[in-house]
Image (cartoon, rainbow, N blue to C red; front, side):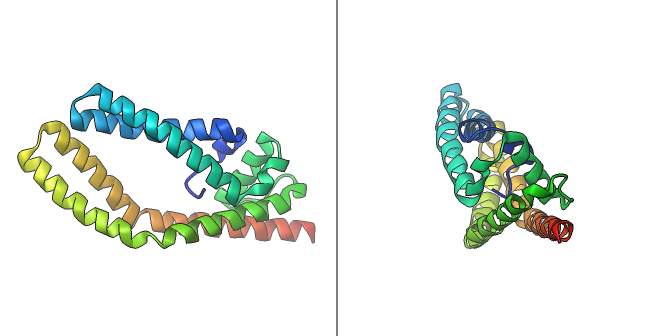
Length: 182
């Protein structure tokens, strides 16, 4: 939920799942195609991730922000944008929805925090795989391993700071909404 851009909240749960699953599926499907050299492998990864990731993320988003169903698409987007940017809501009637969204972000972040150790393990494996692929693999293997390695380095060093910033912004937006209604 923390990684989902505000624009995606404009759409209903099915289209949100298609957007998120399609984006992740297309990216990782392209990497699978490049790595394996077989288009069919990339297509299988795309289809599986599009369906599974899209469904799981849409359900997770709904679980963390159940009151989103009471809002219109533009209202959901407005609340998510205000929270992510730490800005005052234009519509004070959405203050409770903003608080619920912020709470959902915090719960989602806490749930993923339990798995941070796994990212470090995967990073070590990715370094070894990148070295192996660079020495013994095809150019496609080396490129894909390098991309995965860069993504994991971002996950370890950049994402925690960005996540803290997003959570702080959400807290600030809720505080400002509380000041406006008092």
